[in-house]
Amino acid sequence: MQSEFKPERKHCSIVMRGSFNPAMFQPEWFCRNGILSVEEVDYARSQENSPIIITPQVSMFRTSQLEVKIEMDRFEVISDKEPHLIIKDFITKTLDNIGNYQITAYGINFAAHFHIEDKHVYQLIGDRLAPKKYWEKLLGDEVSGDERKSGLLTLDMKKERETGYTLVRFQPSFQIQPGVFISCNEHFNIDDEDS
Image (tube, rainbow, N blue to C red):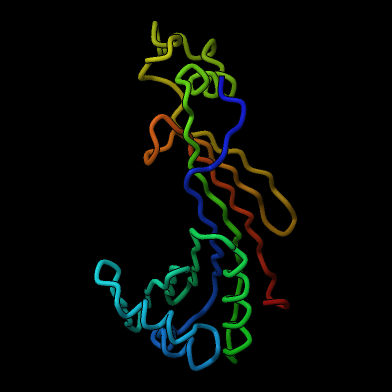
């Protein structure tokens, strides 16, 4: 039986909600303000399968460490390489370099895909999270066995807080078979005075 679960693929992101001007956020702007190196801008410019997009509605580009997508009401930075702390530095330096902005909410997100070697363990995880005895009428004979096709698809658990919420999602991985996908979103609302 598998005794330890380590993520095979994972990524972190920070998403801010507010009011942004996507057209100003070109890779060269980040370079001029000491947020990205010249090498990272060159990397972004060389990506044929992930081209740079700059319009009044959206700016998108990818560096060797980050994926950046800025819309008029959303600013998202994703990292799928360690150290993920680079996201915080990127966001902090960006906010230090823009004068007028308003952020109404932000989220810190983590997601990972775990390979489950043993199909029995894979099914056992779903059985523990969603006991099949409550679903026998719907699932019929498909409530047991390691090769079953029916069962848990998505489980969301939410913890409300005064300042926002924590949302944890569990579902089968569509990237790693057999495997599970787990994501966690720490969402924070910002009141008008602090925005």
